[in-house]
Image (tube, rainbow, N blue to C red; front, top):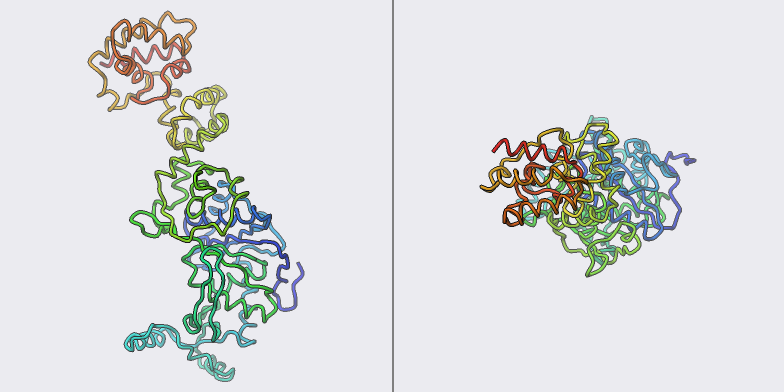
Length: 502
């Protein structure tokens, strides 16, 4: 893309909807970040617009390449595809701010030259003294604009004296207002937002500069972001006026501030909360469909009486005007229930493939399962699909099928064995040994005849010891179908193993 002599790329001129998701690569991705990405993605897909993925990595002290890779991996795992950005490209790149530093330096210089910004030479000690004076006088602390009126000659003299400066934007002496897409009309009175820093004394640009500059140059039409950023919006709206004067922006984007996500104790969910970690949900066996479905409900709904929907259905129905401005509470129980519903909706072959990775991590399956092991997993998956809430339950539910020889019996299962356990196991072996074929229907008929009718036991007492012997657990997939998958030899051997240990 050709650049003007200033070194600043030509701005986008596309009038269609363009939204962006622009996280900083600091730490692990969290669910609040994902909710923001999801709402932007849905808005773009609903309107037929463009979803821009941009990395705001100008904080060299906190940003990391690993976090950057984790962000790309997280969005890919979730299925939130982007139209422009890293790995995809686009006409307004680069899409990593660390690769755009010359642009920001040029814009900052031009803002100062046109009188929209100025160098501020106040030292940290002077600013702290100012704040103390303001507090003592009962006024709100804040910068008083004392460097606003410096002439170019005065500023140069300070530089020659060895003083360092930041760059501050001049806030207009007029109210700043906008019609928020979520909250309606918002107004900040003149003087309520003070001149703010856009470039540090070491020349490093701040979020207050790079974010609106990139939005302007990339033609972003709608900014959907968290409510915690609302206080910075009047600064950005004011800066857009300056960027328009420089010829770098044609319009001010529409802003919409998404509601807080609250965690335990009705406190704002922060990225440091264990409950907010995306990796915890991914490693805990949540499926992307279920997690995104639940996050969509944090401030929006597809209908009053409907909680389960696909991302395609969300994109078709999404209306930013229907986002609730009130805080939304993250309910882990509901999130888990929705995840369970999505597990039940998966095709068994798809679910089997997803379970394989969890069985491998747990050591139930090797890194390269055999065809026989994969076939056994595929056959067993429908037995547990209705019972699972997360994929992480798979190893516990299905692990007994992949054990060679005797299965380890859990302590609580052994302690719960009834007094009749030995008699039950003897009768079960006798009933099962002659079976041919060894299928679920035949197994059930033989055991009912021997244990319920023959010994006069209730089914729970009759089948409990058999279940513990075969699976090692008190709770398992359907017993008779599990025994069919194990086969006669293994099933009978396990019955004998438990009987011998009593």
